[in-house]
Image 1 (spheres, one colour):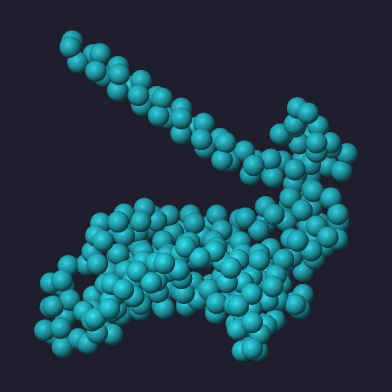
Image 2 (cartoon, one colour):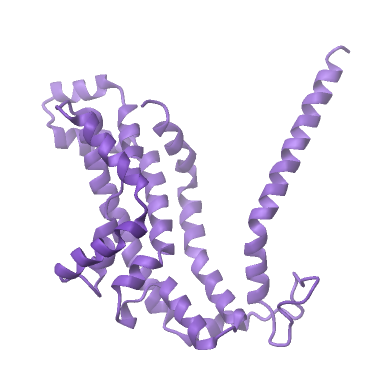
Length: 281
């Protein structure tokens, strides 16, 4: 009987925690709910009515078809997918190489290099925008896929995350591989990389979402409309139709779907990757 008050307190704390999580989730999902609601409304609906009408009457699915046909969204989606996937592949390769060297190799100045890499995270991208554009211009990469991809093909966060993941791998595994005659690159590619797959999936998710949603750098580099990413296409859609928020909202919903699907595919590695990166400094 003495345990009943304790059990009740535990149940109350759990209910409070669940209520808090539901409240925070509702606040976070409310903008997406309003976006979907706006995308499904008819021309006669008042988008700015108070109180707001969350459930459209009638529901107009044709807004998605019209938004798809107004601009070459298929081309924009292809461009964005190509840029995002290519950036993910290059980012994982270059970041993992650097991280492996900083985590597993012993050489003078290793910690200093790591601190310099981490220091770059304190520099806002806007500060680097003009010099980065000048370098891209002189290399002849303006208005090309390479001009969008290469400047973000490696980043300090990816190096740090994968370096932490490599550091958690027991030294005995590497020693056994060296006894079997494996070189550094063989150990990196065939032994270490499979062991840090959760961290790789986490970095891939971060990179994909960041590239998919990037607007500023493609806006600066790309000039030809056939090279536009989806975010630039959405901006031009707003320019064509002014304040036609129904089509803009429908196109935005289409743009959000791939990132949600990508995250759902990688979510089982997500927590593992973040946890593995925090085990050892």
